Amino acid sequence: MLKDFRDFAMRGNVLDLAIAVVIGGAFGKIVTSLVNDIIMPPIGLLLGNVDFSSLYLNLSRTPYANLAAAQAAGAPTLNYGIFINSVVDFLIVAFAIFVLVRMANRLQRPKTREVPTPSTKDCPYCLSKIALEATRCANCTSQL
Image (cartoon, rainbow, N blue to C red; front, side, top):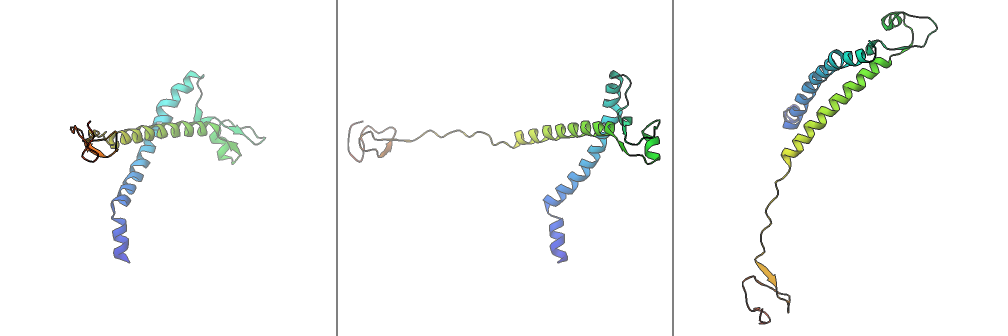
C-alpha cells in the first residue's frame, strides 16, 4: 500500500499540480499586492482620495470613526471596499490565466499537414480507380 501511494504521489501529474498550487499561491500574493498597493491607490485618488480598503457600511446604530474601530468593537459591517479590491484582484488573476492558457494552446496546436495529392482518379464510365497518368481504363478498357 505504501508503494502504491508513493507511485501515485510521484507521478508527473501530481507533482505538476503541487508545483502549480505553490506557484499559484505566490502569484496570488503578488497580484493582491499589485491591486492593493499599485492599482487601487491611483483609482482612489482619481475618485477623490478614496481608500477602497476602508469603505464599509455600518449595520449597527453606533457610529464609528473607521472600519478598524467598528471591527474592534465587533460591530456588524458590510466591507464593500475590500470586496471591490478582491474583485479587481480576481479579474487580474483570471486575465493572466486566460493569457497563459491561450499561449499554451497556440503552442500545442497541431501544424497543418499537407494534403497528399491524389495518385488515382475515378473512371468516368465504370467508376473504378485508375492511375492519374492512365489513358485507358484497365477494367472497362474505355479511352480516357
